[in-house]
Image 1 (cartoon, each protein chain N blue to C red):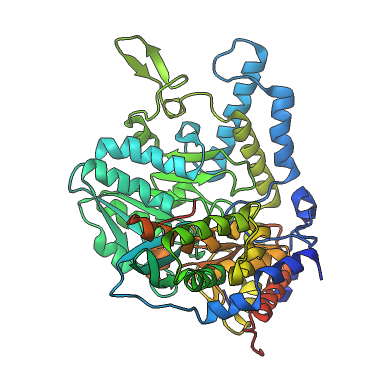
Image 2: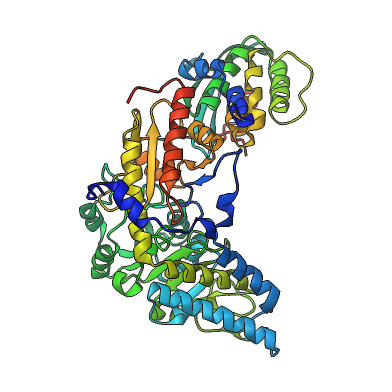
Length: 421
Length: 150
């Protein structure tokens, strides 16, 4: 992270001219310029995405897979094209390995309720890490209650990295599933997923990766990662809420029972018995979020037009700059300083609770997240109730970081805890 | 000074800072005859309220836990406000205090509790200011499931 000699020079060189693409960024908050630094929660949407969703309803709206009429065929083509766009984006071998869900949470629950309920029995083990978001903990706890499987948790070190020795020590022939985050939403730590997948496969375990924080911030390739399942949300990738993706390897999907029953997921239905469609339709019961899928494809097109290499370079330079700027504040302590880190800055300010800080920053137009970030066990690991978290995206720049630093100064002044630098 | 800055100073008054830095009645109470836990799952604030009640009068009250300045100061101010009052008076005060933060408050002297009026302008923080009161209420009615504000 500190390999760049002069972060500010690097920063100027990597800045992306995208602010005008995001109409909401022009909206003042409490009379101030909005510095939106809550991208880990959700990203803002470019005009291209807003227009794609609106255009679908204006020009293409019909239900899919059922009409013989022209509009229905047109909508079906757009929906299928969105699936193909996702397939190319994450390097899946086949389009039918892409299942549209409501988001990461639903994608993980789908695996727990189909693959998990069929495959796991008492005494089997599920291995997760201390970094996980509640959505990659709770579905597995529920599955353990249903099947008698046992949840194991790999430890993290003081700087927020998974301890690979500890991870390996918990792998055994009893390990049937490994469920790990790609990038920690609370700390930004990037897990060495390919290596962890290799170790998990060596004991015969299936691997699910929670990619919610990863897909917008680095290139993600299913063949390079080698994982069996990969879950992510559209809304953290500049797309709309209510649409997400579960990637599953075709052999695994073929053997998985359906989860929700209904229209679109069947082959034949009689009152005696029904037969089910192949993947992905088997897992997409009911009318899906067609407009959301189309808009997600527009978001992927937007990201690819910017270029993932440029996005990574910019966010990395901004992270280095922001880390240096925050670290210079007396009384500020960074939480999570992994060697491999994405654009997430979690921190504590001496004598100021993260929620008080969040309110004061908000009064300056600076939007951050304060709290446990849906990772309560991780906060417990560090012995803290929560942190303040600034999380970066393509449109953030030096001005946003300056606003953050100045708002922290205001909070310390108000609380009477400001110390000379 | 912007309107927002004015609201912020209303919220973070000196009394709040004082009670946050040095909360009153901030200790556990082995001889308590009533107690309850409170938890705000969304922000992680956690506290336990202890009571000693004699003849329907709150003889002693204390709390332990952790939370933001608003939640800590509110718990501290609450302990001062309820000591010596009857259970019925305390329940009535809770109702009026809640109205003070969220609704049309009744005409009454809130004493030092009035410094929390600034929370009205910050709907997201009402739960911080009321957690201790919900917990106190649970302690009074003998509800041992953790209190929350949602």
